[in-house]
Every structure is written in C-alpha cells, then in structure tokens.
Length: 133
Image 1 (tube, rainbow, N blue to C red):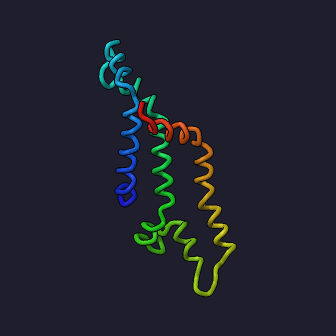
Image 2: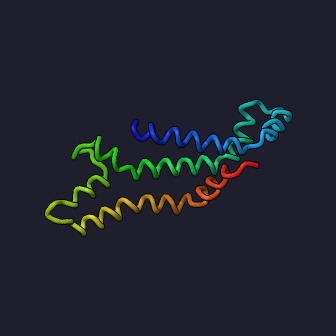
Image 3: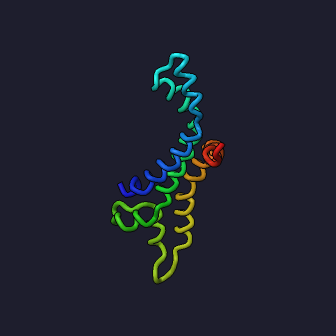
C-alpha cells in the first residue's frame, strides 16, 4: 500500500497528459461511424496511449523496485528485500565486498533486462505527452 500511495498520483498525472494528447476528433469520427463510447475508447484512444501506458508502468515498476526506505522501515529480517540485505553487509567491522557485488548483480539484472525489453515503449511513451499542439 505504501508504494501505491506514492506511485498512483504520479501515474495518474502522467497518464492524464497522454490521454490529453488524443485528439477528440478521432473519437468523434468513430462515434459518427457507429461505434459506441466504449468501442471508440478501446479501438481509437487506447491504441494511441499504449506507449504512454507502457512508460507509466515502467516508471512505476522502477520506482517500486528501487525504493529502499520503505523496505528498510517496514520489513524485518525474515521479509527484507534484497537492497536491505545488501545494506546490512556494510558493518562497523568492514564491508563484505564480494557479497555486496554479488547482491548488486542480483539487484540490477532484472531491471536491466526489463529495460532492454521495453526501451522502445519508454522512449516513445515519454515523448508522447511532452508537447502541446
């Protein structure tokens, strides 16, 4: 719930800018052609904002994945996340560099792979709502 509290307002704000970019004339043309309101939404507006939805999903996932503070405060030793476990390898007696680097690879690998898979959606989605016409 804590992640949703901070990600949801940002996602709504971002998605609103993407939906504002969809020309009303396209939806009106679909309605004139006989489409219902929902058909116009699903067949006209939704395909136009899919890159924006992808970018919003990517950013929300990355925010949740990288959030260290909530995990540090709200978890215990049995339910801690990987970044919190990595932070515990730095102690007063020294740093366990081998384990820190191994956990770093574990932390970064899913996000790097995810980023490589969705990079095209991210670029097109982030530039979609950037300018008013």
